[in-house]
Image 1: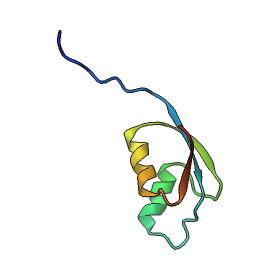
Image 2: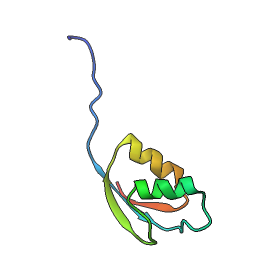
Image 3: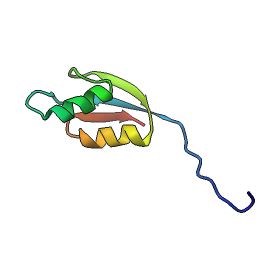
Image 4: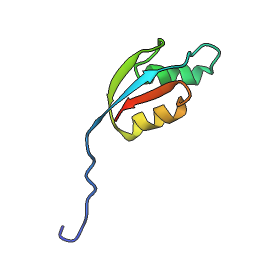
Length: 69
């Protein structure tokens, strides 16, 4: 396979903190928070940095804060 370039993903972690309440939010947004392992205010989780996690963060970006990448 000479000449083909492959993309190598760097396996890092990302720390997120919940800063917004899921009260009066759509049920789908609550499920996104649960998928991130959050649910209570000021909860902090360290997750593997992947496109799936980035997508979930993007969906609830008004309720979470990225602490470190």
